[in-house]
Length: 191
Image (tube, rainbow, N blue to C red; front, side, top):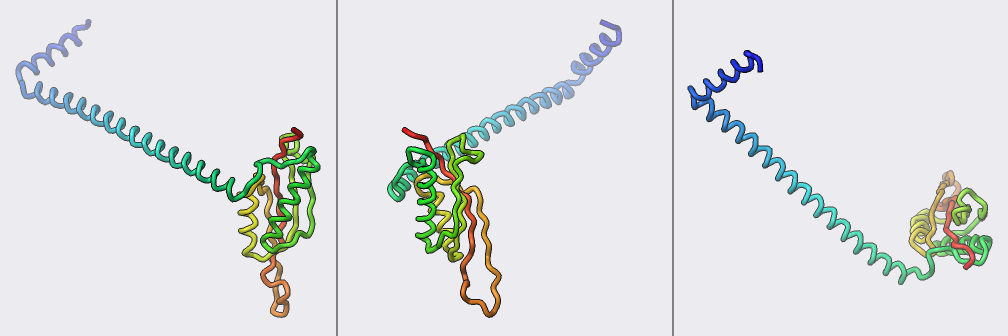
C-alpha cells in the first residue's frame, strides 16, 4: 500500500471520529440509497405481477371467446373446415359451388370463374378460385362475411371492386358493382 493511500485512509478515519455529523450524514445517505433501491425493486415486482395478471385475464377471455365462437359457428354453419372431394378437381368444384351459392344468396350473379388446382399453394393442399361477379354495393360486406365465417374455411386472397362510371342519363346499373374475388380453401386429399 502506498503512503498516499494510507494518508487518505487516515484522513477519512480522523474526519469520521472528529465529526460525528459527517458519519451520520454518510450513514443516512447510504441508508436512503438502500431504501430507494428496495422500493424500486418491490415496485418492479408489483408491476410484473400486474402485467402477468392482465395477460392471464386476456388469455382466459380469448379462450372463452374461442370456445363460444366455435360452438356458435358450428351451429350456424355446419360442415367440415376443409374442402371435400376424392380428387383436387372435385374439391375445386366444391369451392366454386360454395362461392357461387354465397354470391347468389346476397343477390349477385357470377360472370366468370377460374379454378386453380395447380397454383403456387397447391403443394400445401390449397385450391384457389378467381371469380368475377356483380352485386349491389351493400351485399359485398355480407358476401365477405359469409365466405370467411362459413364452412369450409375459406380465405379471401384478392379483392378488386370496380364501381361503374354513372352519368345523369344512366340509371340502369345504379348501385351495382363488379367484384373480382380470389378465394382459396384447403383440401385434405383423398381419405
